[in-house]
Structures are given as C-alpha cells and as structure tokens.
Image 1 (cartoon, rainbow, N blue to C red):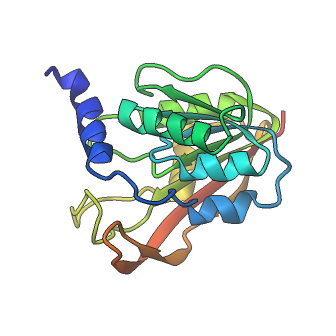
Image 2: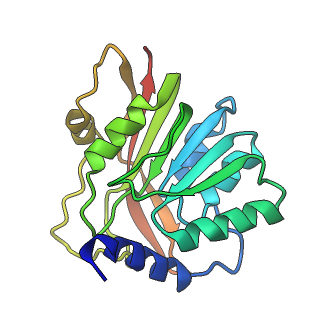
Length: 209
C-alpha cells in the first residue's frame, strides 16, 4: 500500500478494532462550550465514532461530519439512520490534507485533530476559519498531555498552546476574535475503563466580519 494510503489504513483499522458497544459520548469541552448556542449548521472535523455529531444533531444542529476513515463514516451514517437523525447528519469521508467539505458553518469543531501522520493542520484550521459564517465559531480542542491509553507515548511531545495556534493561524484580528484560550484539566476515562487526569488545550474563535 502506498504511503498516501497509510493514514486511511491506520484509522480504518483503529475504528474497526474499537467498535463501540454503546453509543459514543460527547466530548466534555464541546458540551460545555456549545450547550447554550443557538443551533445552526455545524462541521465536525475528524468526527471519529460520532459522539459530538450525534449530541449536536439531537439539539437541532444540522451537522456535516467528516473523517478520513470510511469505517467511522459508514458506522456513523448507519447509527444516524437507526436513531432517526439522518435528516440532520451528513457523513462524508475526507482526507483533510487533500479535500475539505463545502459550505458555510455556524460552528466548526476540531476535537483532537492530531495524528501520527503528516497533516497540514494549520492550513486545515485556516480553511475552517474561512468556512465560518459571520458570527460563527471555530472550536479547537487539543490534547495538552499524554493519557495512558493514547497512541502517542512520546514524553518529548510538544503540545502547542492555544495562543501558539492563534499565532500560527495568522487570522485578521479585525475579522476573527479569540473568545477563549486556556488549558483546563479534567478526569478522563480511556477505552478500557481506566481513568487519568488530562489537560485540554482549548481555543474558541468567533468570526466577526
């Protein structure tokens, strides 16, 4: 298999080997930050099992969910149909290094868009910011620490801070405003039921013009 297809294979095998026995849950920061927002059009980048997508759809959002893994996308589409949410969820496979979903969005969520493969992440997030409607928000939540169950166990990993991400995005401050940039801690539960304290790097930006 060529190098360009290795990310597809990696994430397909990851999701194929981690089929959820229960409905996937929402990420804590997404629920915290978006609970009081008025529903609109959302884009879930790197949707994985689809917990965030389902949570938003149940609250009236129309969600475009994208992932590089066809396994994850097909599984989410089937779950949306079985839950009666297919009219609110569009599941699309995208390798974000090569393509980006069309449309304008009131919310773009990029949770843990970190991968062992090369990804032009800054370019992807810049594209996401430009895909916002006026008043829309870009929510970027990254790992700020290494959980015991993470695929990344490199102790020398540098986790870019929210403000470092803002600097790299180089967006016009007259058109995008930082609403939140911090590094809160929380207790997290891994796929095997183990728990650990982890750090999230949280960035919330709003398009103002």
